[in-house]
Image 1 (cartoon, one colour):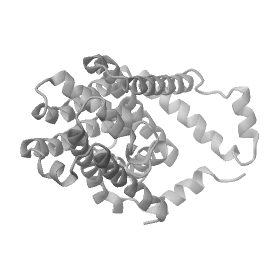
Image 2 (cartoon, one colour):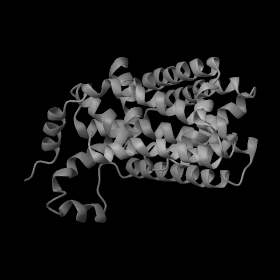
Image 3 (cartoon, rainbow, N blue to C red):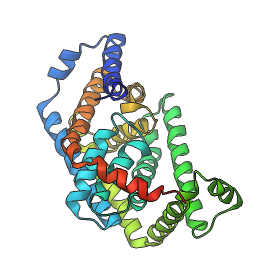
Image 4 (spheres, rainbow, N blue to C red):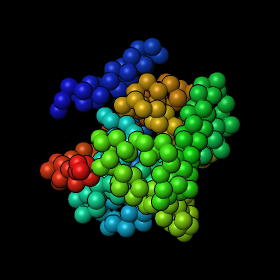
Length: 302
């Protein structure tokens, strides 16, 4: 493990320790006081959510369910160290490559999956944040709106400019270094347009994504007997993870503090980190030589 990755895994632990000191919470006591029913349901709900979203991913990619499950499980683990497109999205794409999907198409499909993860998740947060208003929620609202605007604009642009390049794009791809990427870029637009035009899969994807988040929120019922508030807790955590910081260290604690007492914040953070890390069991599924071959194929110079 390289130093940067090691630091990425260490930061959330340091943040949790610092948080516990600031709010005078004994970490050992916080861990030992986790209710058994909450603990078991948390991990079961996490696996259940992955199963539902993996089925959605299999519909999007036309790959088998188990491949989608492995890709999603590992991608979540990778996000602990590397957030965003370079982390979980690329990780899922790499898994798809091993099923003979070209890297550019695989990465495009992974991005399309993230479109639903982010937009459905943030939309749910915006529908629920009023349940418990807090000044800290203002920051999360801006993050949610920014992500919806960014993703919608990006996919909208790809949809309406599919099959063509504007002047700026033409100038960029006339640069020798970027010329090899023009075909992959055009493929990206075409794939996204085709997927967006499939209304049936789009509606299924929205429903399954929301269902997955709802299932993931159910364990919080053992803490608060309010399904809507439980849903809000889950979506608040999701929005925090959209900030491009490894493991959302510091941001997640801050976001959860807006609606939960410190001891619950620590418990949720620890359980989230442990559940996400389970995906590393599939690390050996990635073969670097296959990826190198695909990258060379895409980036072949003229």
